Image (cartoon, rainbow, N blue to C red; front, side):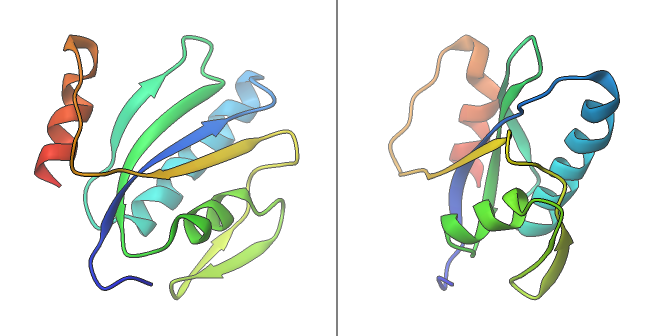
Length: 119
């Protein structure tokens, strides 16, 4: 773990967008990220089909630890002292990218840009 929290863009691509699965998995992902983040979450983007979306997270955890906390298929992982039940399967994908100091965004991404500047 790093001493200072870092900003990440966490992108999730779901293999299935069945309404029942979305109703179960999406809140689980959001709740998991909220527990890992030291700042309020902000959604960076979401596809109209809801199968791919990105959240902005501020965490002391490494990118690999964040990925592991989300991607554990039907297991329990212990990350940063938190016990997190897994909710994704092998058709789902996660990409965690650390953000740097320099960023820019157009009108459609103003909330995400504001979040990166304030957190």
